[in-house]
Length: 114
Image (cartoon, rainbow, N blue to C red; front, top):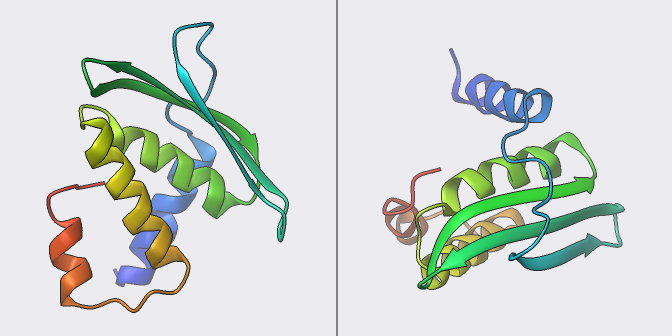
């Protein structure tokens, strides 16, 4: 199996079987994200206790890649400190915006598996 095929399968799996989709009734930090270029909208909610992300959920509408990314990111931030979660989101966003893939990025992402 080619790496591209694996990526497609993972993206489609998270799109068809989203993890952490939904809303918390209360007690969560909410971040609303909107991409006016393509129309994707995501509302991310985090339950944080003592500086650690205990749980995460999202709702929204968008393409398969944005919805899959939200699903994967909510899995990845659980158990991380707020700073680690923010750094992971920032690195992911930079890579998605075309930042060159290099050994620095590879090394940076290793401590934060998704």
